[in-house]
Length: 622
Image (cartoon, rainbow, N blue to C red; front, top):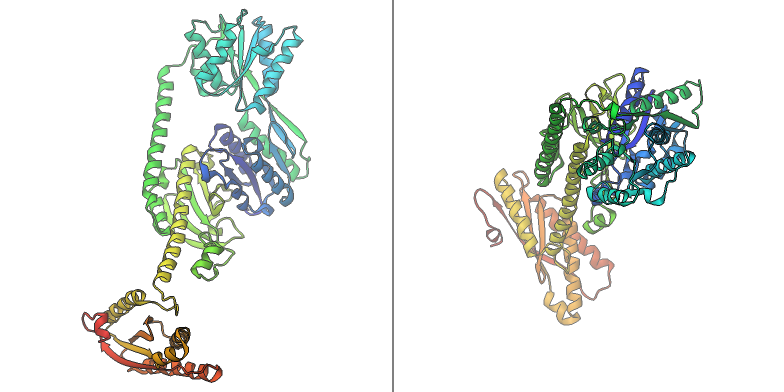
């Protein structure tokens, strides 16, 4: 069943071709053997400012004790810190076998592609088959971990054949025409023109071929060009590109098989497993292997569909961002998402799960706003959005012992992809997805979709925090500095609402006016400080006497206090009498226990008015 046969996959940039294909191989092979997969995806290294600071929150999602095995695609992570943090967590929390997919610096048993051998094979082919004597290497300055070993193998093979690989025969570039063209111009400026250029990948090779053809050089008659990766463009350029194909899907399948053999006790994970890759010799180095290009209409349509897809994703991103920008309430935001979730291609299920207290105010804000501690259940997750097979499911809460509510695990072998929801260091929760027929169909537009959700959650949080602070500021500004009770402005706002409520329900309102006795005498005999002290004590007595909800009180200045009380039809003034009795009792105890040279007493006047029409505050206290 799902909970007992589960493979965890940790990968970054799942919208890349390599990552999608690798995960698809793992998922498909696992499903054949009756295992579920859970993919925990990150997007580290993307330049989204504060959005990218909290990728480590992906480690809060998994239940590591549930895994039978883990595939850690560490080579896909651009942030060294995040990669190392995941490795530490896996070592400390996983009791199952862990297989690391990486070309270099693996800390677990390693699965890697044998791309270095292909760099050597390509160099041998250029020397022995095409009699190349000067071979230049065009590397990538952004991906030196993979690029540099290929350059070194090229140099080693040339040395083995008695050829010299000089410093000026290598250059590292970025993925721009300007950068590549500068390096190629330097290659061509040498007295001995290069016979071949071995490029780090197809992307650079295509830029190289365009430059060489513009220079009037023939490929491969004047110069040979090779790449790596076997991209779609390499089959559709003229001449078609010699390259290296990587069996990434097969590597994913093999990753699960190695884990499975270990889980079954058949064989422990080998420390290093290499998946061989194969060169594909085409027209860019072999004139006799130039293939007639397929009908260009097909490739043009492929590119048009790709452009249309990107434009559609951009427009959806703009529309979603605009729609969510004004959202102030979580429920409103979730309702808006329902109109956009269909834009996620092939999406079958989409869930948003929020952590307990995801919108909890920081301690300092709670202290300023006099807010109580949160009483949310720390084990209760909120499924705030649920979409399955085109239908919106109801919101619910579920125990955090499961990543999703149990009723959602309706299939025998589902495969879920999880993305953390966060903004900066603030962790909100996570999104969970499945795609039609178990496909790993995540693309870059999904990252934009999730970015909008994160921005919305951050905005709701900030608005709530701002609202709390504004409310507190308004409350402070409408309070009397001496007694801490509402002042004239605060009392007017509260009293107006209470009168309106009474009129709506047909109730009566009791207006009470209190005065501190002997104010002038206390001031004349004992000073202003003692007078103010007497006012504060009277205010505390009245505040202590109030137990009803529908009541408001204020210090109007001097020794005067106003109190307004909502009185239902059956009360007949009893509640007002109880307030006076409690206030007098408070003052009697105070006068008896304290040694002031004066006693504090209050007097009052009271009237009850049935609110049957429009009644102003001034009319209540005529």
